[in-house]
Length: 227
Image (tube, rainbow, N blue to C red; front, side, top):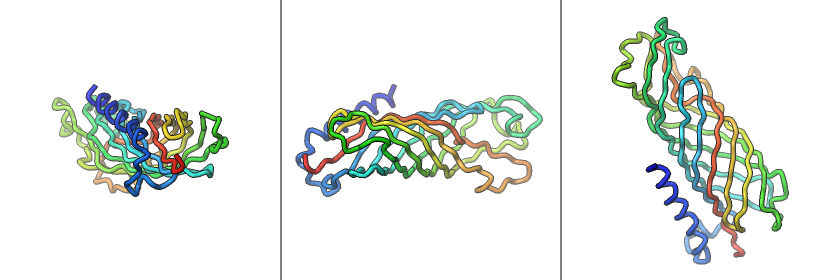
């Protein structure tokens, strides 16, 4: 509930930008086609990991061309997890439970409109998207009753990171020439941790962020110089 209340407050602040857009005194607001977004995302991971929510802010650019781009700055929230020795290559199948730690995700994305994005009559603009991302921070906190000392080859990463690629599709729903909703969904492929880590002996580091489908919804504000 706290996260939802904060998001509602941020959305109200975002919507208020339209009321004073005519005052564009700050240089970053004067660039035609600049876009800003506030949104929420869901990361649907498997293998005992709960769906992980995220809150993000985006800055991008859209012109009269079909190709556009944006940066996402996302705060990934904590979520529950549950794994067994089968997944972590132990002989003991007793469950290990706990929570993931919050993390920060930075991504750079491209979008390509499938219809004429310059149409003044159209209200819905579907697009394809692809991007690259990096996760900083995160890790796991085990439940008190399930400490990893029980498992000789189960290891928790104190501070983890990863690099990934994402691709998907979405649509922008115009409320006006400046305000719109953006809905997107797709798949996020995280590069295998073995590429970046050297395992010590038989130890296995349990990944808190793996390849998964995602969905997002945001409120989008676009700067139009002529208005």
